[in-house]
Image 1 (spheres, each protein chain N blue to C red):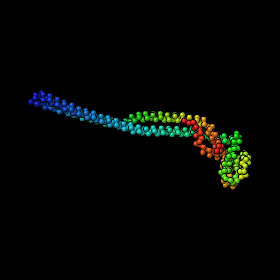
Image 2 (image 1 turned 45 degrees about the vertical axis):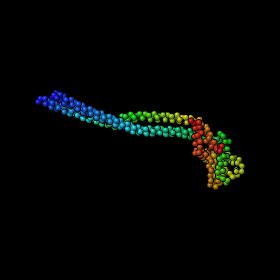
Image 3 (image 1 turned 60 degrees about the horizontal axis):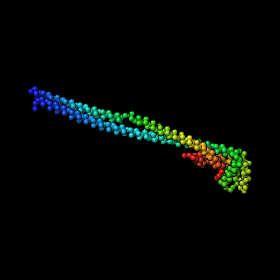
Length: 103
Length: 202
């Protein structure tokens, strides 16, 4: 009789072990789902990566803009120098045209 | 089977079943997390791509703005130099009567002939500045047969030089003053002057 009781007791223990395992399994899956949800939420709301991207791009744009304007200043200076060099020729052209010379 | 062996079997079976359940749960959790990681990466990549597109647009706009600014600066520099050339030319032309009187006389002669050609063969009156009336009279004398159809007006020309010719009935005028010629030169010569000033540009 005592042996039957012990076997039944063992059976109960076995069921408890299985139940606990199932509970733990449920918890593991639940926690995984929660972590996955958090991961997706973070991916949708994370601004840091976009902020960093924006700052990097801003620096790049500024550098490009500065380069264009710098090149432009050189071009303006070159144009002014060229105009000064050809100033006399241009003035003569206008004077001759106004006076009707060579027409 | 002894009761001890039976108990052992029950315990072992329970342990194995529990391990299976946990292993299955762990595999499911790993699958969920891996899937979430893939989705999160896709979401982040998508957001980065969208953001990059916008940033690229902003960059293109900024670069275009800088280029337009540059073109404006160049045009303004060009315009300043062209204007300086026109002003210098006006100064030189207006001082011709005293600096190069012969050249000015030849120019006035051309102005009169040009106006006469435009107005046709009728009798014409030449209006000049008070101080140039005598000069114009002498020019007319030098025009030979044509001179008979031209007379100098006693009206005073309010201009920096040049002449106005009109028919005797004052119905048709030809304005050939220096001021009008400067205006015409500004309208018609601008591109030639720019070209002349930028000659040798790379």
